[in-house]
Length: 138
Image 1: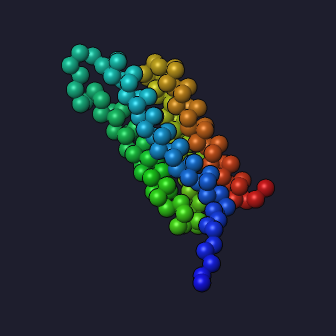
Image 2: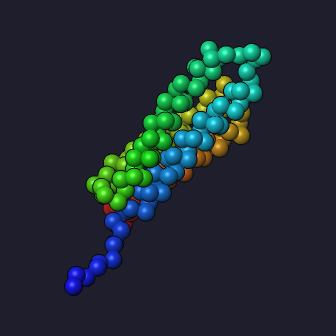
Image 3: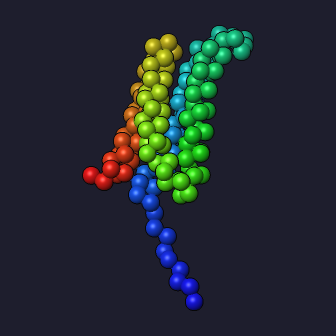
C-alpha cells in the first residue's frame, strides 16, 4: 500500500499568495479611487474625451497589475521558481500604485484618496519585501 504524504508548502508560498491577492485588490481600489473624484469633478454632459486621459493610463496599468495578481494566484503552488521574480514585480507594482496617488491628490484635489492609494501601494511593497526576506531565510 502506498503512503500518502502530507503536502508541504514551499518556502514563501503563503506570502506569495498574499501578495497576489493584495495586487488584485490594490489595482481595483486604485482605479475606483481615481474614478470617483473624476466623476464628481466632471462638468455636466462630460463624455469620453473628459474621462479617457485618466481612465486609460490608470486602467491599463491597473489591469496589468490585477492580471499579474491573478496569474500569480493561479500558479503559486505549481511554480515555486516564480516567487523571486514575482516579489520583485510586487515591489514595482507597489511603487506604481504609490505613484498613482499623486495625480489623485494634485489634479483631482482629493487628499483622502491620495493618501489611501499611497498607503495601499506601500502595503503591497511591504508584503513583497517580507516575501523576499522569507525566501532569503533571514
